Amino acid sequence: MGLLRVGFQHRRLFRSQVVRLPHHYFHQNPKPFPQTSCYPVPSTRATRRIPPVRASSSAVPKMVKAIRVHELGGPEVLKWEDVELGEPKEGEIRVKNKAIGLNFIDVYFRKGVYKAAALPFTPGMEAVGVVTAVGPGLTGRQVGDLVAYAGSPMGSYTEEQILPANIVVTVPPSIDPIIAASVILKGMTAQFLLRRCFKVEPGHTILVHAAAGGVGSLLSQWANALGATVIGTVSTKEKAAQAKDDGCHHVIIYKEEDFVARVNEITSGNGVDVVYDSVGKDTFQGSLACLKTRGYMVSFGQSSGTPDPVPLSALAVKSLFLTRPSLMQYNTNRDELLETAGELFANVTSGVLKVRVNHTYPLSQAAQAHADLENRKTTGSVVLIP
Ligand SMILES: NC(=O)c1ccc[n+]([C@@H]2O[C@H](COP(=O)([O-])OP(=O)(O)OC[C@H]3O[C@@H](n4cnc5c(N)ncnc54)[C@H](OP(=O)(O)O)[C@@H]3O)[C@@H](O)[C@H]2O)c1
Image (cartoon, rainbow, N blue to C red; front, side, top):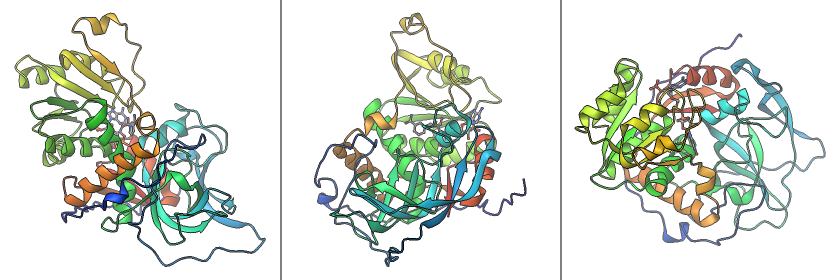
């Protein structure tokens, strides 16, 4: 396909300094979300200003480069094209992206597992960038602010984009834009899974599948910090080493070992309190078998395919709980977003979470990044640089 894999780097950007976010970061101007978006805004005074890029007042349409999908399919359908960018309207901002996080959900949309509203579309659900223009009458946001967003509207694989002003959060000054882009969606996912969907506490034993992946790495570290015994599954020895380093007390190479038998052995036949299963089809049934009586099955992804339907009788055997949660339903209003992002950023700045930006690619080579993610070649977070 003529694609060069220039950007495949193994970099660990670990942070250790402790920075406290100001109290007002969490409690500004609560407002309900607009109908068009899934995430609210944090407008805040803890704002970093980057030298402004002057918005053009010319009538000539502004063109930017973006990835576009005209037909569903493999990574090759991701095309690098010129697209027209308008001016922000009321309630909107224009953001020049500095870094864009790659997520498995981008693969689902590209393949049609999840349906985009229309074709062609620009994929991408998270980014960090600098505000380059604000819509008429907008307050609380300024040109030069460094902001992050995760979730709807889809379309972050672009040099610059228009966003509803109230879906972005301010990136704390202590956090590098690339770190923020690699963690805003995946880290908020870890937050809601561990702190709200099933509340992990000291003494719990948990099973995390794909523990060396983007979300898995953060889940393992955060659960360890919460005092849980963490069992992680991975496909290779290299990934096992990373998962161990990320706080997994036990690592199972599920391509070589029967993970159900190993969990049974590790827990002396008791089973685990909760399974965080993002792999789906290949692990779902085994995950149910790993749970203790009244355990929680949290099925939050399908990297290997959609799990088969589950008869209620499968849960009755051990009075199990089953949930299929999504970040969007755990960040339904501004307060939830501010709290989720705030807790995540605090854990990054304090060093509880070591953010592994193990791979960066130029945005123009998103196809290669998708191929590597799908082929299980990546660990930690993958970031696209415009
Ligand atoms: N519900 C939500 O709100 C939400 C939000 C964010 C992410 N997610 C889900 O979380 C999961 C992880 O997302 P991520 O972006 O961080 O990706 P990731 O975990 O970095 O990559 C997926 C990993 O899944 C494992 N895997 C197992 N079988 C696979 C297969 N047949 N094909 C591909 N991968 C396979 C691989 O790890 P091994 O090689 O170690 O097996 C692979 O590295 C995804 O399923 C995503 O949909 C859900």
